[in-house]
Image (cartoon, rainbow, N blue to C red; front, side):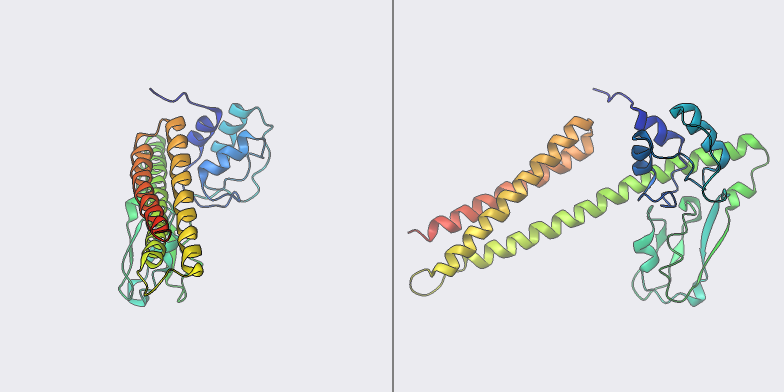
Length: 258
């Protein structure tokens, strides 16, 4: 089953997918959703006048001057000799286009950088420059420039979505690990009879696990509505983990009544 395209999809397809946030939203998709709700279409500097015109035709909004000057394609370049390996730029990059590790030199993957500028401000030693993107500069004609913009948009969208899934997975794993620690702590045997505080602790563990199950079911239902097979698979795994935690928490709580 293929999901029917929506107005949001159509708007998102016109945006440059730099994920720069200059429109006031955390990425191109949220801005597309806002435009579909009636927000102004003139807040995308990387899209420039061309994107503005296409959005006007699609949405029927009157064409207005851009709120910020149009921006040609850029690429971030780290002056590697000055990099202190703080990882702040890696954390800021919305498309995971920066390689490096803590206290190690970082470098930008030029072909995957969207020129969003989000890595510049967090750098504590100001060692990141923005330059015209070499693929844009090397384009010999309008067809080649449009081909580059199309590649940038596809990569920008795909890598941003992959980063969002990665961060969501990390958060789920951290939440589940906290719940496991809570259940293990509540399940520790104690000398003598179980005290009321321990019983309350085990009740809290059950509630936390129940919440995890509910969240997983909501994620799964949302993924099914979007017909997103990858998200469905992730949600199913999370639901299975949460269900196991709930069973362990309930067993621990039941043992206090024995």
